[in-house]
Length: 151
Ligand code: 4NP
Image (cartoon, rainbow, N blue to C red; front, side, top):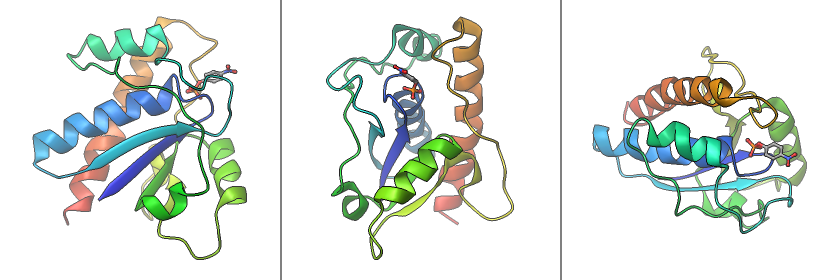
């Protein structure tokens, strides 16, 4: 199963989501191939934001190897799931999405009918506490997502 996490800049939320999904999948014994991307091109080639690196480091996860990239047209046929962090990311992805593609393109917090973990709000302009709550929200969604992949 191939999963792409997507936010705006690919430096705060989606790299954290990638690291957390990898950890949860490993813990649950589920084979996931993961990557992340941004809808915008502002930060291509950069490491995740220091605050995301720190928030994940606090729980023993290392995301420093990741580098930002922009969503590409090909992603829609390379991945099974494309997970948007918020409704703006989702709207941008739906504009790019080809009519008949492999990927299910959904909001991460609402990836299946009847669940709603909310949007993962952009923490970029806030402080460290926003990054810690982002991490906790991402863990909650990731655990539910991975558990439901195997059902
Ligand atoms: P992300 O956060 O989408 O979670 O990576 C942002 C990063 C950078 C910017 C906005 C959001 N920016 O405007 O540069």
